[in-house]
Length: 260
Image 1 (cartoon, rainbow, N blue to C red):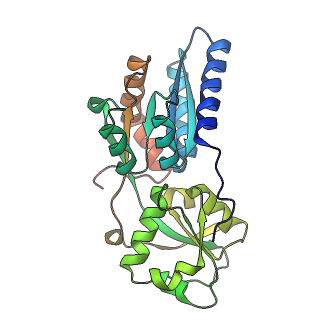
Image 2: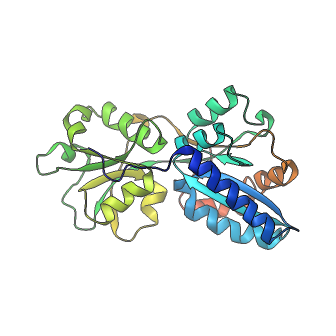
Image 3: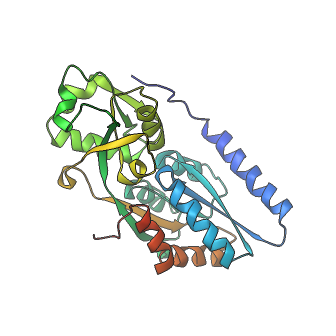
């Protein structure tokens, strides 16, 4: 079953990003406009980091294009004018690298994360096995084929041995933030999201963390898109995001250092 699982055609997104970039150039011709496509799970933390970065680098206009990692990958493949790509999984970045669309030397693994089961504040669900109970009719996860969070959720449910029991209850969302919204609005009894997404909402509670051995490591690779006209500025942004100042903000939002 799907709810609101509609996205703009990829070519319209490419046109939108192009117009956004052009508009920024017209308004701030003296600035370098740098566009980063980033997984939706990074929305809050990157907006916070941007405030600090732009204070220190007033000649850079950092523009974000948030969405599911798979959709962002497709936009880049279709020629969207993107300078940097920060994915929530290696798969999407690997595909761009195989097609020669990223600067391989610039690629780094920036962050890691975890997935958790969430529900309403008064949820009666206590753990993952409760999802098989007939009282639970709807479980939200992101679309596994295009959203890393959905892929990790499916892996965990399969390795826990309950995928077959809950498959018919699943509501697929276009990205992890939509999963969170479904739970917040009470449209589903539970959802599986990143730890960091659960942290931003005061309308849900974390029922249980998924066993980290039940899903692939959640890693966030970052790279410069090949052909950017803002190579130096893009390199500077990567250096800033990998630096101690940004790491503190990532940690405050619940992201983990790679390897931890």
